[in-house]
Length: 111
Length: 113
Image (cartoon, rainbow over all chains, first blue to last red; front, side, top):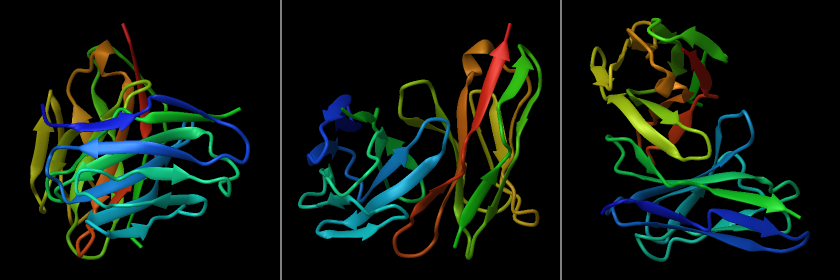
């Protein structure tokens, strides 16, 4: 089945630690996105990528990094510079006119 | 920059009531417009879309019409069910190179029997 897969579903991070969230899609979409969602709030764009080896900062990129070495994969690293990383992270892919398909999300908690 | 504004929630309705969730947008060019739904603990699912002015998107009894003159894309359903309880997001896809997706803040809908 075609779709977009995020892993893990739950992730715990210690203070000062970097963690990487995985996002894989087999929809052959060019564009991929990372969003952050805080409780009771909307989605804020972290990074997005339209093609392999190219990505752009979104509205809240500080403390995050991404790579796009393959069309299917767009991992997000939450670095120790991100001071408030506890949130629900959503990855999406799209073919522009037909909307985005979302993964099931990763809930990151700082312990 | 482009933006999306939704009515604040929560919206609380009885089963079989009529639903309207307002959405207006600000954009340069001619964006595509979307409604997404999010159930607790899950990702977002595309509910419906419209790609040009006067288009009507529809799915599962929900409808929304792309109104360029009022820059609106209001979501409606004639008779809601308890299973429609969720958070609804209005979104636009920017025109131009990166087609960045911009979301509204979301509107929580609670339907009671």
